[in-house]
Image (tube, rainbow, N blue to C red; front, side, top):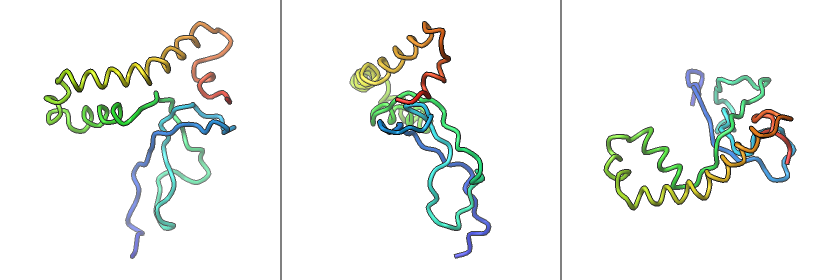
Length: 124
């Protein structure tokens, strides 16, 4: 099959730095790019350019579902997202995953020795 006219416009994924990883990257991040699925796939990011990694809070399947529903199915999911059971579930997950992450971020603002991004990308 001739892929000369096919081009990957954008590829990204949510990622978590490996606990023993020494690469300078945020612990939780949105990474532009990724592995090629085929050898002759045309990707818009040149191999010689470092792939950017944007800090992003941690997610579980519930928070990811909320993200997808709001961004891709806002009208269709409105009824579900207004149900107390759904909101309670999302709030529990926010309490488990988001609250600790953002509390760590807030402590960095109290430390004048480093920037937030510098702290989030520091080695473990």
